[in-house]
Image (tube, rainbow, N blue to C red; front, side, top):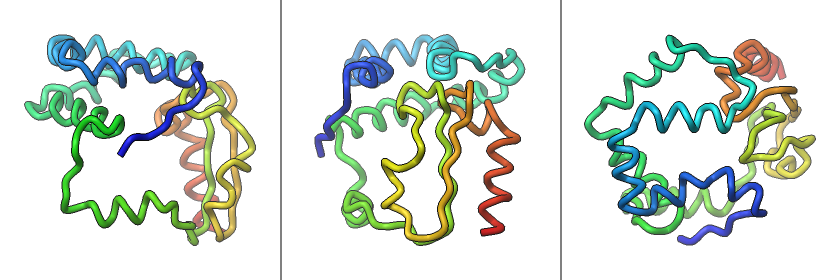
Length: 162
């Protein structure tokens, strides 16, 4: 399935997605797993001052022998360049229809997330039929749970009280 993308500024944030569509991109990730991923972390969360210990805890997963093939397949699938697992076609079709979510929900935007421009939640409010709230987290990028763990946890606790 081919998916339309968005405005050029948002497309720029996904530059590595297109890189991964090439053999050069697969080799680049294979040969530079840690450096490549650290670059992405810095690009998508520009104000997050993570230390090497924080990065290294996650980076241990990059040494999994299936890591590169899984990452590359995922990005190629997103672009419609690789098939998904046919066992999940029925579920993919249901999700593609954009079903309304009935459970209480709080959505979070990172103000500096290059993929999803921060807003007031109105763009996707109609996707939720239960009690709903939205928060924009100032100075936060793409990795909300690690960049703003307290705000993330507060939202989880708050929505449980809805």
